[in-house]
Length: 436
Image: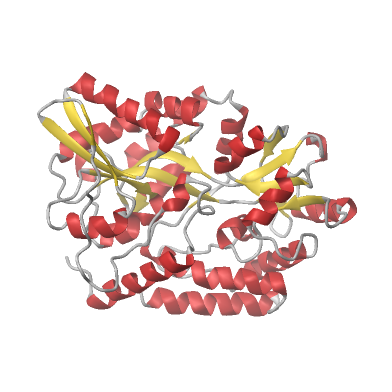
């Protein structure tokens, strides 16, 4: 079916807003492969987007060709390329890998016209909008259904693939933020167990401007603050396009963020928080796997530990879990062969290789068991078990501006926690209504 004109127009405008403001469903730009996701819609001009012109990497020489559009680059890409090269040789197929930086816009033009790929490598928050625009297709008819996902993958990763009760992808790896601490500044037995402990210890430990117990990308960033909302019992984005922020639980989360603003620097965006930890002026930071290499290169003796329990609810802090995945394009020329390749990519064998070389956090349950001796990967696996899948419905587009503004208002004191959650919910509902 075709998208309603009103919905398509709204998606276009939201796509342009996200492109301009950089409010992405992941980590700071340049820090993580997940963060590079594009806006969800075509340019507002309505003009056809130019199709990819970069030279593809062609692996193997079989008669069956499987084309993958992706965003893998650099050293990270090398291991993935070798995995596909091995598969092409073993199965006598040809695999064409094409780097498509603007995959959202290009897929919207190429897929309906039959000029698109067989597989799109992306992130799970793109599932809903892509399914509605008929860029991707469900996998149930090819033997990948909800039961298959739950049998082979971690629950949070399996849930991230499911949209409107159908399976839309095979997980590659997972990303979530967690607590990372400097062993030279704080010992494992001193780590706070609850947010009340965290606040009390910080008030005793801090000596501004050069000594802080805990920092994170706190000001105006709902992705970074999500663990406190989820841990307090708030569902930020429900599948039906509603939100739970305007609730007693939401007020509790907002109050906690206000308390954090009193123990951290006032101007605390990602770079400021990360620099404090790199310079060993902060004992703990809440950050993700994309930064581990920087901490190791700096010579910091760091450890990982799950986000503390939110004292107002007694539940652990629960970050968003973004899941990289392979999706089957609508109008795929070789769908059966593509699905077999997708299954292979989700296998324990492949995900162990990705974990060992690229330090990716596997979604495959068997792979997780076999790499658990790596303390960094094990630390992130432990955190994802307390995580919440990044919303994969079309309503995620309504989350960023309202809740970033809400977080900013709480942090600066521009609104009370009670007023901020009401304002945030109202703006969310206004934007979500346009997506229905």
